[in-house]
Length: 516
Image (tube, rainbow, N blue to C red; front, side):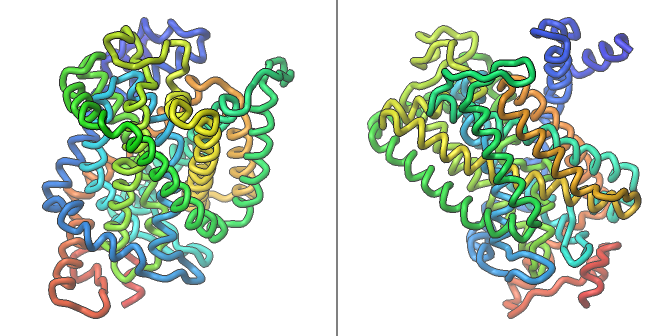
């Protein structure tokens, strides 16, 4: 078994000897598996796929930008589905989370300021990938017990005809969004609360010392989360459509204020980002690797999470929701992530791991935890005093909490796909309890292990989904056909768009065929 593990590690450019340098065996294995999954192969697969679909769609993320804005407010909520804006909000609740605050800090801390540039690149190119996967989610969606559902498991099964591959994706996604990823979000809430409100008072929990602040945060998060997820997808959509836009706007406005306070330094910061992207202090590989890694974690383009929310929307044509979801990548990375990056860099509240502070330009020392919201909180504190830490803690609570809601919805959708073949009593109740347990545990555990496990979940989903959508392109190009059909109707000036998959040579789009 050890020989097999070593061979896999070497294939993916990971020295197996490094796998056993962690504090304990579990931490070491998690770190090594993370390194295998997030090898250079996945980094360039994400970038290459985004470029590939950008060229094929003639850079739809630029050409159709105005149409994306118009479509945000089209489509209406129904008994079986949600509106385009609600679907965007649910999707954004998954995209806009701790990755936008703690994730950006980690990208800068491990990859240098140049990592921000590569986050922008993966967002720009990833918008085309987001269109493809979300349009596929719409094309192959189905009605399940009065609700619209869809996602990679659905389109892999129907378009590719490989149910075994759909099973692998569904099970992987249930584990990732139900167990691995929630801990990252709640961990950042706990760390932010501890930094903002203090963590001196310790209590004993199952043999470990945990700060009272973190324990309080864990109880509050789990309590509110349970109330909402037991209320179903409609309650999730109604919560996120209010919370996400308000918090995102407030956070960006706060960042604009910080930048305005240091406006004379902005040209120098932009120059640092672009220069460091190609000759970074931590090496080109670190900047690209961490920029793409945290970019994908944040905007989720290609990961396969966006199509789940996209499929739940009531729209006249699949391409419409694909375009709306492409816009969500811009909101996530180009607005919210950029806001965080500029605040950190313009206030010099960072350091680059392994690089002397006099060279890196950051003011912080290595005693500050990189994989936490600390960089962002200290950036705001340097301008606004103690309120800055509290503001980030509150913003992070709402960002991360709505992401937890999105994770539950995604996991539930894949459980719904699985139970068409295999059912057992109370499967959704088991999922809810497992997710709440993961959230509680994630809030009080260390940041490094939380992020490593979360990265494993993101990476596995990205591998499976990106390979899937590339195979579907080879097999029949359904998402591109839908875009071409939508543009034809748009050029013709139709009053209401229609979608006939059979005329386009798209098979097994049963939901749309029944609408004809």
